[in-house]
Amino acid sequence: MTCIKCKGLMLIHYDEYICSSCGNVKHKRHYFRGTSMRRQIEETKNRKEADQKRLQSNMKRRHKRFYTRREEIKDLVKQYGINGTARMLDMPRSSVGLLAKGVQPRKWNRGKFGKEFKLEVALYAIRNKNNYYTAKKFKVSRGSVQNWVREYKRHEGVEWGL
Image (cartoon, rainbow, N blue to C red):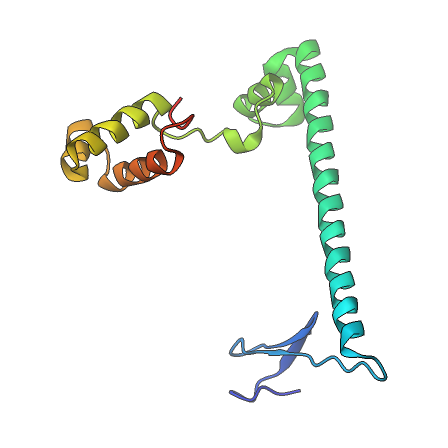
């Protein structure tokens, strides 16, 4: 099959054709011979539910694998210490230490500024109604101040900063 726009080769990807040259997308037509529209909708719905279940089971498996690995690392740290475990697994010591503490990987990058500081800056900016001078005073970027103010307002100050 060729692309309508550039006459390039169309590749099949699930329920659509994608042009290898320009990226044009054309959806496949589903011909259900002898079936009603209701049946077509039901089959599509069942296919989507099956995909959702498959994704959920994959997430559970990944979650389980992470937690069992973390428990193994905790046991190794008790036995050999952080440095020995890091050498044995060929991992950075900081990662081994964080895993042994029970910190999840997505919390490893904690950011540059603490929550108390962000709260203080957001409150100051709201009080003075000027993000530019607030950023200059606290020596942070104006974009950061704007983001912190927006987050503070979104959460209405409840459990955001601390």
